[in-house]
Every structure is written in structure tokens, then in C-alpha cells.
Image (cartoon, rainbow, N blue to C red; front, side, top):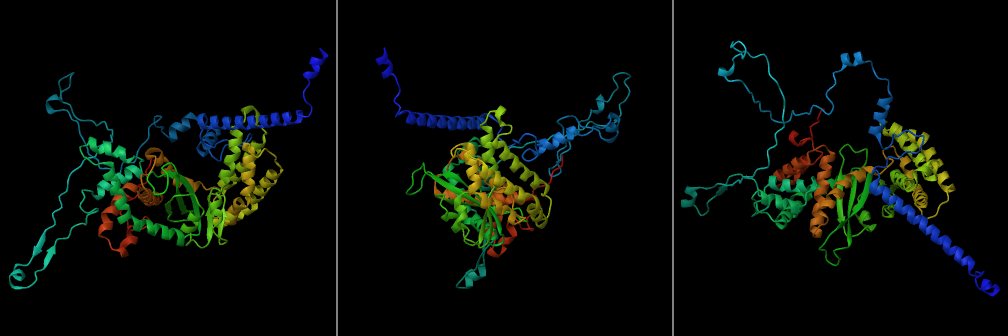
Length: 524
């Protein structure tokens, strides 16, 4: 029995290695559980980053809810006072602004022979009318315009001269030569894809159901031809103005798949880069550019005429190598996002007082201050930030330096991101025109991301480049309060017959644009 007990004793020399292996497995298990909890929170939890550390009011990322909560806590007026001052509409009802639409009045009257009182058989007289409004939808219709341009010559010269003048009547130039494409048809195709995210193959089906046989290849060729022939001049003017007339820019990038690209597999990622103006721009500009990779060489090349100023981004290192005259600015919303991810992965019972919650609390205070400064002039905002925000940010980084966490854990990633981005995050306080986050760029690139979910990929590089041009014009139009669909149609009607010197009159910031393509303010 003693001999058997001896054989069962553990090997003392291998025990430390076994303990280390167990500890490593425990750490790996903890990290995997953390990642699983975060993925569950992303998939089944609320998608907004609305978490606020315990004890704080929920102001930063749920403004509407916080204002509603404040109203709820306010003292309610007496019932008699409500009746006297305001007659409430039934819940769910609102008055829409229909002033821009044609109104057709329809009257329903009793015939003369039926205007008889059912009680005494006396005559009825009108005492009033009931009134309601309905918005009528008329589906799209097609018709064919046959453009006959009349040609004239001189019979006298024809009979008595060696040459005869031939005069053609004025007529609009074709958008695409030898094609049935019109400005209205192509603008609708462009709007359906780039504004309403409807892929070309679905448009092909819709056209077929209306009796118009247009293949997606034909539609695609129209879009690419229109972009390269007519819209490129608008795109180039937007890019030039962006780089030469502003010194505060924002940047972002996202992946896109291009199937048929020479020397590359269909599965390889390409990228759509976005550059846009900051908060100080009177006329906002948005510019997309397609490139095959995420190399830092692409923003360096695109921004070569942007000689000095600020560039705000999400922390990608490719934006930090643009030269000493360009100050790279970080995004505090991204820093906060890392801490909220770490917080989401924790059990609700253990969140209160945790390190991730403490990090979120610091950053929420910064955003609360920023909300207070929102209506200030840029110079005054700069002073307030120096006085209140920057000291708080320095306190946050002192706390970050004291926190220890596993590098691969979610908290460790949050801490490492904050440390690596410290210089760029603090650059936000260098100018009052800068914003605490890069959300302005993310909002501008979002329509492309939403569209990509529907059309999935571009077939060729030419298609991706055309998309970059069109998205630039569409998003710039929207930023300048233009109706993107109507603006594209207006351009396609005007550009074929315009001189280069007249181009400025049709740019999205021009005060010469007609009112019908401008977004009308609505009242509810």
C-alpha cells in the first residue's frame, strides 16, 4: 500500500509548470467569457452607447430621454389652467406641413331632390361642412419624348453660291449620346441607389414590372458614364474647395468589396475613404475617394494640397503621418466606446464602482461640459475648455496611468487606447472649432455603409470610383439642405449645355440654385 501511495505523489519539479498552465487557461477563459458577454450585449442589448455611470444623470447620449425625464419631474399645472391655455390634440395626431403640395378641393353635396327634411318634408339649407385632408400617392409613370430638332438652309445660297449655311434650332444636348437615357430617368436611378439604398438588380426588376426592359448592366453603364462625363467636374470642385478653403477637416474610412479588379482577388478588401469639413464650415463639404488598400499613402496623397490645419480621425495611425503642419486630433467618443464595451461585458451586479464605470464617468463629465459649451462662439468655447475640460482630461489620464489590467482584456484595451491616443485626444483643446468626437465624419460615411448592406459590392473599380463621386455630391447636397434627388436631376439637365465658367452657379453652396430643390422647413 505504501508503494502505491508513493507512485501517486505528484512530481514536484513539474508542479510549477502545471500551475502556470492552469493560470494561463484561467486567464484565457476569462477573456473568452468577456468577449462572449460583449458579443451578446451587442447582439441582444441596446445598440446605443447610452450607459451612464451610476449616480449621473443621463444627458450625454440620450438627450431626448433626459429632457423627457426633466419634464416629467417638473411641477404639473392645474387642470383648469391647462384647459384655458392649451387645447391638447389627441395622442398620435400632428399637423403636417403640406404647403408645398398642390391642393385639389373636392366637394360632396346633396343633390337638390334630396335636400328634404325627413321629419317635416321641409327644405334643407346648408349650415357648414366637415373637413379633412388626405395625401394622395401617384405611382411613377413613363412617357417618351421624341426630340425633333429642325434644320434650316437658304434656298438662294443653295442655288447661287458655292456654300450653303445650315442652321439647327436650339435643343438640349443628349445626356448620353445614342441612348434613351434622360436626366429624369438617370437621376431617379442614382437617387434610388445612393439616397434610398436600392441596388441596381432590384431596380431592374421594378423597371420590368412597369414594362420597361432595362438590364442592370445598362443601368450601371449609364451611372458610370454620367459620373465620369458630367458629375466629375462637380466632384473636383468640391474636393478643391475642401482642401484649399478650410483648415479643419474630419476623416474616416470603411471597407468595400470590388469583384473584378486586376491583380486582386474578389475576396480582398478595398476601402472607401471619407474627408469632410468640420463644425466651422458655413457650407459643409463631403468628399469620398476609392482606394484599393488602407495604406497611409492614400490620405497623404489626397491631402497633399491641405498644407496646414487640423485633421480629426478615429485614431488610425495612417492619419498621423501627414506632416508637422497638420495637427492630428483624436476622438473621445472612441475612447469612451472602449470603456462602455468593458462595462457591457460585466455582470450588472458588479458594474457599480468598477474600473470601467469609473472611466465612463470621467468621459461623461467631459461630454456634459461640451454640451454646456455647444452654443458658445469658438473663441469662448476654447477658453472654457482650457478652464474646465482640459484639467478634467488630465485628471482622467492620471487615473489611466494608475490602472492595471490584462492587455488583452476589454479594460486593458480601453486603457491602452487611451494611453496611445493621449497626445491626439488632448489636441482637441487646441482650437474651439474642434469637436470632442469624430461623429461628424461617421454620420457622413454612414449612408455608404447602409447602402453597402444592400448592394454588397461593386463590380469594377470604375463602378467604385463613380460611387465615390456620386456619394460626395449627394452627401454634400444633403449637408447644404438640398433635396438630393432634385439636385442631381437639376445638374443632369444643366451640365450638358453649360460652360465651365458657369459651373459655380450650380454648386451645392450656390445662392443661385432654384428654390424647388431646397429642403423646405416643415412644421408639426
